[in-house]
Image 1 (tube, rainbow, N blue to C red):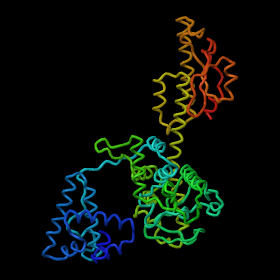
Image 2: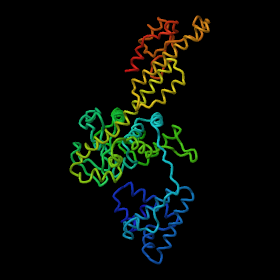
Image 3: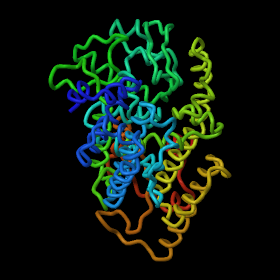
Image 4: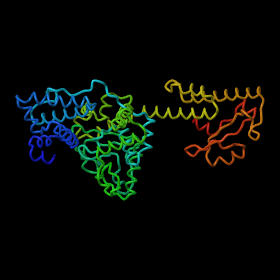
Length: 476
């Protein structure tokens, strides 16, 4: 169909020639062919019928019926894209000046479509279901950089020289290093002509996206794997490549394939839409998660960091020869905007650690829930730890009093029934001395640490025992 239209349909060929984005060309061609299969109207016939006063209204009615049919089927997005393809064709061929001049306005849903955005816990779960280091980096790239799916190959594939903070001379020696430790800048919708990064060709939508150090680590592991597989990495190498099953590692990963990969990971992790069975989280979902993580900066800066045209034009306009300065300006915005999120995430992790400590020390669950409800914005972490210690000591005193009143009965080879225990989390090197002191192994944690405990005598139960090294580490 493409070859036939390029040869026989002058309006089609000239239409595509005026579209600068290869990704947009593919999208418009796909939806124009869907319109053709329904109406049997070629692009040339579309332009002819709309331009002729006698046939114009009939064509508009036909398009309206097609859009309505897709809307009734619950696939309004297809109707919207067909409308966009037709409008683009008519505008590029001079039949209309702007989309808003067209008789049919952009089709919109009468209800607000749900936006599925993963929580941090759901995103971490998705990482576990990624099948290779490339897919893990793709998730981190989308979540912490906020790039669209078309970012990978529009207007041309992202290459390693687009990673402005990647040390290419070191890469040539087989080492993956970055010039900045706090973030990594990637030029999007633009090209870098030389490995020194001095010659940059930019388009109106060119902007810089950034990655946090944890995402940079996933990039490092991915590139190091490619080096181990024998690939010679240079500035001209693709940032994302196909898997090396077919031994053609020089081929870039397309945007369509990247979209399918993220959706597949969402399904494997169990995140699907019950009514349709489709993936709940997509690349766009991760992009929204990134946008929501930016705090403490202006909306224009958030728009620029997320690649929205409004923000890009406000922050990058007139910086053709000063792209480096623009990148450093936005780097500061990015790191500041993500600092609040990183701090909050770190505090929540520390809070969860304190709650785990309290559970191990025998604090009742209703007291644990009291600690969970504490807002870290008004209570310091030190105060939270002191509260957990106080609850632990109170639990020990109450338990000791109950034992004294109820008496003690031997159980399990001499360990008293309802005995209080001192619990510790230790490494293997500390295990043998503690076993000699009467500690028993309870379980082994996923990180390799070992939970041990010993029964307390009456005096220890009432007065408490000195802080263990693990407790001191928690507080620190």
